[in-house]
Picture 1 (cartoon, rainbow, N blue to C red):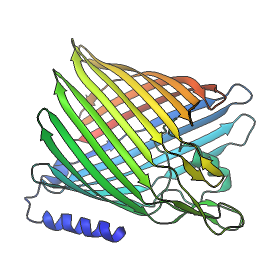
Picture 2: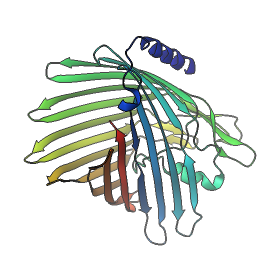
Picture 3: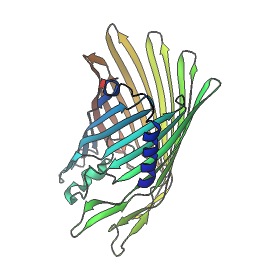
Picture 4: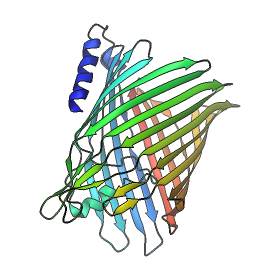
Length: 366
């Protein structure tokens, strides 16, 4: 896959050689999005705190009118602290993603070549393993779900067309990763080889009156992961995460002097296999409503979000999040801070869940 990605990247660069150079740095933008997410799970005396401070950083620059480049990474600190138990903390850089995008024609076809560089945290010490693994929970949806996924490459293509009142987009991509050492053991490292992934996307949108309606589907197909040292007595263990289907819908429309945003998504994961046996299928449903208000020169957008999680048809958690965000300019900077409080239940036993999310999006440039 690295060879395929290199060929795609070379073709993109050659195709762009005759383009007129764009304004380069003057058209670029830098984005920083610090976020703090914290949850308390359980009741007093049997409570576990899981928190993450994440500072994603992304830089986007157009080389030409058709070719653009972006680089993204993050600094994160994850902490797990059970009542009366030992605190686990992992901190540092995550992997770095490089991506080239080339547009053919009038924005109708886009080719992408990506590379994941292993700049994150690997061969994690046993006392930090809980902090590294707790953030990979789709229901809790931490901003950074992994500190490292190994060297890997992605190639993809997207096509957009209009059909009457609808805009239609189709895309496909293939990802290949190499083996990496995830956790330290007493005498060796626990090594993972992630499965190949094929991802298919489809989306449509259109104007409805003065509003815009959007639907999207993403289907991810995975091969088998392998692990060296996950199971005693075997050199390698084969397991699978289960294929995934993600659906989205959104409607954005002005209402009086405000802007109403309604959205929903679901994530369905098929049955998979872990080193301990079968991993049952799961479903996460999420609905959100937000209302953007302009009060003189001040913008405020209160919102509410509801999420439900089931595993093999059984309830595994639910939450309600209520918060607000605002936005303003500080010279050349666009700033959008937000905050929300969370309450609900977690796990098949329905233990208490509470927490908060605070963050900001800061952008410099176009």
